[in-house]
Length: 84
Image (cartoon, rainbow, N blue to C red):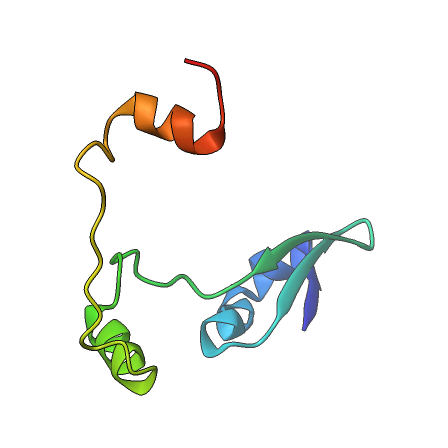
């Protein structure tokens, strides 16, 4: 679906088709100007989905550890091969 800015103002309810997943492009002088996309909640990480993926990949029992000086900036410089 494509609208000019003027049409988008007049037909905003139809432009809301983006919420249903349809691609909606607003044009200015015939050129794409803005693309409307559905707004998703910025809720951070989806822990339920993460748990499912970990199970599917067989990573449920995987333990991750880091060195004690992991948070030390000098450690990062060492890992990256930068001088002290």
